[in-house]
Length: 325
Image 1: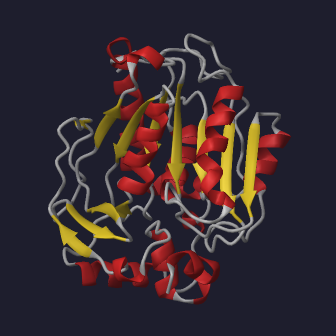
Image 2: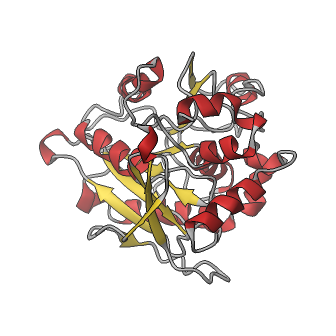
Image 3: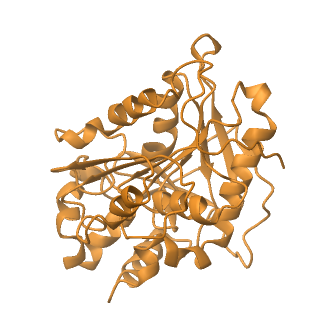
C-alpha cells in the first residue's frame, strides 16, 4: 500500500502504524522493501560525547526504504554540520532531529535534506543522530518488533511529550550536548549563541518538545514540530516561539485535537500552526502533489518574519543567556 494512504488508517492495522512510525513518504511500490546497506561515509559527523547507549548489544546498522536512508541501533550520538556559504550566513542555527519512533532515524528525508535546505537559506544546520532503542539485527526481526510495539492500546508516552520525558533520558542528553557543542564552537561556525533553534519530525518532534520542557541548559531560541504530537502540556512562561505543521490525514497525531497549540496560545507565547488537508505522516522533504510539501517554505517564511533570516539581526529569541559546556 502507498505509504501516504496507509497513514490515513494507521490505527486500523498494525503494519500501517509501523510504516507511519518509520516516517515514510510517497514513493514507488518497488521501493517499499527494506534493504540493508553499508553505513554511509559521514566524515564531518562529530561524536557528542554522551557515551555509548547503556546495555546496548547491537551495532549501528543502516537500510534503504522508500527511496531514503535510515539508521538503526544508534548507540553513539553524533552531530553533523551543514554550514551555509559565509556570504549569506545569517548567524542563526537549527538542530535537526529526524524521526523514526526512537527505533530508527530517517536520516535523509528528515535530516540531511532538511539541513541542506536550511543552509541554502543562510542557516547553519546540525543533524542530530541521537541514540535509539535497541532492535533486532535483521530487518525482518526489526519489522516484527515494530508491529509488536505498536499492537494494542497506544500508551500515553507515545503521544504525550510530558509523559515521554522519563523515558527519553539518553535522547534528551544528546540534544543538550548538541546545543552545548554548537554554542562552544559558535564563533568558528558563524553562529549567534542566542539564535539556536530546533526542528523535529515525528519522534524527533517529541524530542524537540521534551528538550524544551526538560532540556535544562539547551534552551532553544525557537522550535518547530513537523507531524509531531499535539497533546496538551504545561507551557513554560518563557516558552520559545513554536511552529507546528501536520496533515489532517496523519494517522498518528492528527486525531486527538490541537491541545499543544491551544496551550501555547493560552500561555501567550508565539505559535504558528499549519494544518494541511492531505499529506499523511512522514512527508518530510519528499515532493508530493499535496500542499503539505510547502511546509518548509512556510517554516522559512516564519523564521524570516521573526528576523532569524536577517544577517546580524536579533530575531525574537526568547532565551538570551549563552550556555557553554
